[in-house]
Structure formats: structure tokens, C-alpha cells
Image: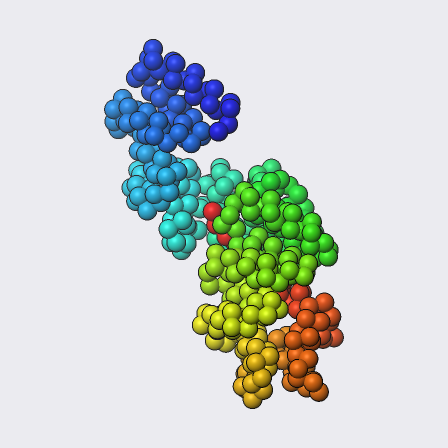
Length: 374
């Protein structure tokens, strides 16, 4: 709780003891109660505000804000949709857009975030950017990001969202710049951690990922990144655990499930690795890297014929498939028993003319995953 807000609320409550039906005092007290997280008090004060001003905008608006704070987003969305019919204000539009996003109705969000709302509310600009990013509109989101930064150059949440997008657009200079401006925002810290990971410093990266996760546990990029840090630091069991958690939080992001499978493979748990790869296959049967990854598992289990069939499928889908290339290296080895050793060496040893290693491959798979809205 912010001490300044707490002191302000105490003063307002003292004033209300002398003037309990003062609408302006009640309005200020409800807002301050919301700011301090005292939702029961906010609700009680707002009920009195509605009694004092039964047809005013403020009471119904705060009722929905309290519902949002309680996580009752479906209730808030229904109330704000009714309120918007009579009061087309930026704060109503933003509240409705946020609530719709939280209940999974992402298609409802962008039409609500018009220019007026985005200009008035920094968090509205952040939300619009995140939804565009999550929808896969990378170019449109990138263009909007530059407009939004001009509107709200000091907003840490927006800067964190731009930093996340910039990593997926492979503009690491912009990503670093925005992550620095994002301060202690968990997404900004996750981007700063990724920079350290790319600089070959998994220890510093893990410290930053830990800071990010201490602020917000539901943070799939940070969990996957922390796992990649552990993998680079030769701790595959820890890596598998963390990447699993990130993949579960992402849900249907195929690259995270494949990264989880590889972490289990390197940790020596081929059954768990196969399960992750098969989960990725269920998400998208036409993703080449999944077939190539399963081919590697087949080879490590001694099933060369099944591996060759999967390699053929992977190459048909994508001639540049990295996992298929690794499988071909394993298939051509004069000593099949060395397959596990080759996989371990591939963590840091380039396997193709582009210098790609498994570590770099996994980092790439876990990127371009879209935004996570909170």
C-alpha cells in the first residue's frame, strides 16, 4: 500500500465523518480506496455515492472498477458495455477493452481503443500494442509502437510492451532502449535478461529473470528464458522444469513446447521429451521442427527407420529445418551409440553453415511468441 495514498484516505475519512454525504469527498475517497486496494471500503463508500447521486455517471463507473479489481471481468464487461451506451468516455472504453481482454474476447478489444482513448490513457496504448502483437500483426504493431512512444514516452508499461515486441522483430537496439526505460516492469526485466543471455552471460540473465518472476509469477517469457539460462549453465533438469512452466503458461505456443522437449531430451528423459514434442505436433501438424525433433528422439531410442520417415516429412515442410539437419547428422554417424554425446555437443557447437547451435535454436523457437496481456 502506498503510504501517501493511505494517509490521504485517512484524511478523507475524517472529513467524511463531518460531511458524510459530500459527493466530491465520496468520489475522492472511493478512488483513493481503489488505489490502496481497500476494495470493501471502496464498495461501501460507492454505495453511499450512488445514494447521493443516483443518476450520476460516477457511481456505476466505480462499481465496475471495483469488479475489475476483484477479477470479476465478465461482470465488469457487461456493466461497462451498458455504461458506454450513454457515456462514450476514454476511461469507459479502456475499462471495457481491458475486461474483454481478460475474459479472452481479444477480437472485441481493438475497436474500443480508438485514437482518443489511446491518446488519453497510456495503458490503453499498451493494451492495443499487446493485442496487435498477440494477434501476430507484427508490422502493424511495430508501426503503432513508434506512434505510442511519442504519445507516452515515460510510461513504463508501454515501454516494456515495446521492448517485448522489438525482441520478436529482432530489433535488439530498440529492445534494450525500451527495457531500460521500463524500469522494474517484469516484461522489461525479461527483455533485459534476454539481452544478457544473448551476450553469453546466463548467470546475469537468470538474476534478471528471477527479479521479473518475483514481481509476476505468471510470466511465460521469463520462465522459458530462465530455463534457457539454466540450459546454457549446464543445468538441464532445472531448465526442463522452468521451460515446462513457461510452455504451460503460454498455452498453445508451439515453440515453447518444442524447447521444453529439447530440455528434457538433454536432461536424459526421452519419454518426457517425446510427450512435449507430440503436444507440439497436436498444436500444428505442419510445423517442420516438430517432426525433426521427434526424429531425433527416434534415433536416440534406436528406431532409425521411423526417424528417416520423420526427417523426410520435416524437410518436405521446411528444407532449412534445424532439427531435421541434426537428425541427419545422427543418422550418418558411424557410431550410433554416440548420438547422445553428439546432441550434448550440439548445445554449443555449430551444426550448420549459419553457426546455429541447439542453444540458439531453442532461443529462436521461444521467440516471436506474441505478447502476454495482464
